[in-house]
Length: 148
Length: 148
DNA sequence: CCCTAGTCGAGAATGATTATCATTTCAATT
DNA sequence: AATTGAAATGATAATCATTCTCGACTAGGG
Image (tube, rainbow over all chains, first blue to last red; front, side, top):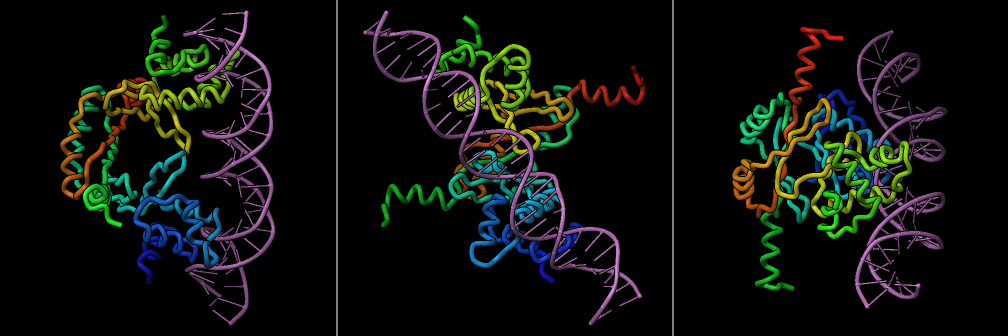
């Protein structure tokens, strides 16, 4: 019934209680989360999936193309539920918010760059970093309004 | 005297024997290498810098802007000596060859994408993947010439 | 030559990820 | 509702890259 559950099923993953919980938590967060953080969040109060299961689930989601990985600070990996199609990301350096950019105007540049050096193009990848409206607004407000 | 040594000195890193060895090995390789691999290579026959020193050195190089990091397979980090300026990379999925692409035609797209969603642009990053001339040539040759 | 900050190195410690394997659950079927 | 084989789970141990510790060492200025 659940939207999340059917998404799992379509990817060939049995929608178990644990997997659904992991995928839901991932969806709820909306920004990249590490497996560790996810596990902590899921087991803070109520009992939740085991750590190994969380790892297995996020990896399965990534393999199925339903999630993307982001390098998190040190060498850790963070995961985020993403649309399966090709897209890029706009990432807020303040709060970690991630927005998908569907249109791909990078393609021609990538093709040209590859061809020019004798490469057979296979794919490309691009991310844009900055401060989201909220975060840059806060930064500006802190100067002028100095609100309590 | 050494070119490598003076590069280190300019970055505020004392050009010790160990550091120079690490930087030279990195330069010799020309493609991303993990700290582990670098250490193995440096100590295979002759005695070389300790593992901790290799880690410290590649990190220092990265912080100084003389090296870039690449995610290597699993969660490991690989390092490669790079020009300090802004550039992108063309990466061969066959042999790991990395070519720097200096011109940045991605900038306007990144700026537009950010502005359109209220982001204050701070930076962007892009990589192109494919097969280099040699690797795609081999793939083709294997079919037609089947050379020994 | 002596001093001091910067370096080194060997090995212990850390911490994320993965493997193990007995147990449980799924879901299709009887 | 009971059966069943495969898939999934979880507690824990094992791995393995990376970082820390701290005593020894070095370079270069005074």
